[in-house]
Image (cartoon, rainbow, N blue to C red):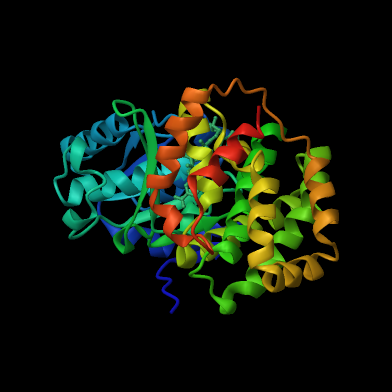
Length: 362
Ligand code: NAP
Ligand code: FE
């Protein structure tokens, strides 16, 4: 079964094409952004022109940090209420867009800070438009929102059909301002999603062509973008790959690969994509024997063998100097074992296998 309710506008000028679909969503949008990227990318100014032309009042909530915390969601929901907004437009990377999803649900269902993961309380939502400025998370087409709970010290996501954006507006020009490190980390996040679309026991043969095509785009176009950040053709290909990654995980969920990364981000502030990247080879090798046929089909589409793919990955030099104490590893093993993505693994992964992967990072 495939369920996919988001209307996608893709390519240069996507925002203008989408204007007639944005305006009927409500009378006053809350624009949810990070501190700088919405302006730097050009997306915010472009959107404001569209809203002002239509005489639509709007309010800005422009303080979403990376890996948004539950407190940010509460503050956003409060502003939305005070200013009388009735729909949301998230602009940015995964952090502001995930925050916008949670603010929409918190507002529509009058949820408090401790109820934001309680999906049984999600009865309705406010309309949401997603305008990505990174090519990574695919959140513009997923039903997930990943938040950080600073009190419990954990990062975890929720998934609910009501969290799907109504519109995804993907203009690769909005990614031209990304620096090489965010470009690399977000592309690796997209590649993780594409691989996890294969790893997951909910895998859908119908979307395999998208997965193969997305992975091929990253292998061909990541290096050209790193060499020339203004290469719009290759930026377009990376944005397409990220979109396909989102379409994949919307059906399949993520797996061990993502669960391993969350503790590294919470404890060390490691960027989300990098935390996936540093365990990508180990997870691939763990799952390969169980998924030989599916993964060989991918590698054949890439024109590479498993070892050729690993050599490409090695060439990206995704490393991090980590002091992983035994106590940290044991705490993280429990966290990973309890994470909801683990139900999607192709077979039951045990604590010893997780421990070995973390120890391999020391
Ligand atoms: P991000 O945390 O949204 O942004 C990373 C950095 O890039 C920020 O400093 C941001 O600046 C900057 N930035 C974004 N766009 C830019 C642009 N066009 N030009 C210059 N700088 C730009 O990064 P992300 O990797 O896209 O999102 C990661 C989050 O998404 C994590 O919390 C992750 O867990 C989550 N995620 C969600 C899903 C899902 O399906 N919902 C899937 C995977 C990951 P500002 O701070 O100014 O914005
Ligand atoms: Fe991700």
